[in-house]
Length: 190
Length: 153
Image 1 (cartoon, rainbow over the protein chains, first blue to last red):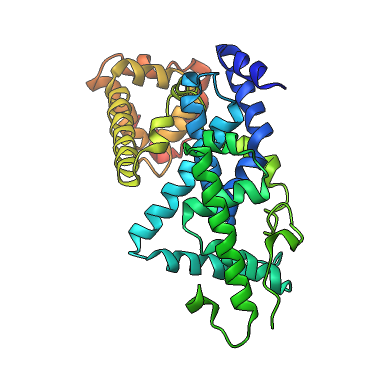
Image 2: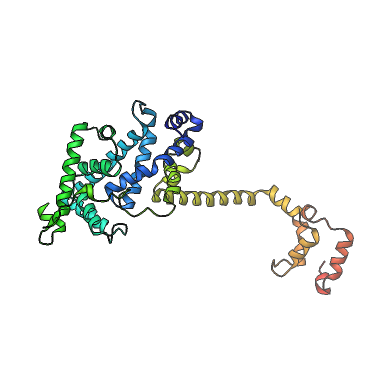
């Protein structure tokens, strides 16, 4: 079902629930994986994904159709992730690196990465990026989202996003290279 | 010298390498989301939905009050019906006379034939109200009595 059909049905009280169910089915996987990449843990991703759709439900009446529905949902998901990570840091008085280390520990326990040393180093390097830079990197590197769409999602200019992505990529390359050199402590070099 | 790591040369794994969610997760997620966003009208249509959301101590209090109220009401209504003469007469009317005599003369009630015989002299017509024995039934009852009790009549 096309987005405009979902929205039209959502605005009719009789088909509101059905339309929203269609919307969740259509976007649940994209939202889940977008969130999961940021928080790593499945349970956290599950809670946040549900929160995202609850917010979508509450605000869909106010959605202006000058933006794409998917971009708008992505924006809500992005804000939820950033708020979650920020509150986690504030709650436990954790500096940036400790949250990154916690996420890295969860990643190491993940069987999907275990056994692939280079991949694990890459993922750990990504997790060490500041939240917003990591978000930009994920959207560009894994989702291959155009910069213009990323600008809508993040509310940042295209130029700033390009700079952020290239800066993130350079830091990741440096970290993995340092981690790959036995005599170097990557965490100190990074 | 170690070759520097280059992102462009590294095979890109998509989606990002993380373990999949539990089996059936995406089949259940829409239902779980819909349960959270059910419209308020649907929620208020369940009259006791607020009770389910109430704290445990409040639910316990309400349950205790209901239980005590039910007990008090049953006592009050039961007492009222027992003290009503109309109810008493109606309930005794339904009992066959032979069964009444048998009950009154049984050992448990401690009423003997002498007391039964004296009852009409103190309360005229009482036997007519509760006992309407036929002459045949009276004769049979008297014949069944031992000689010493029958002699008192």
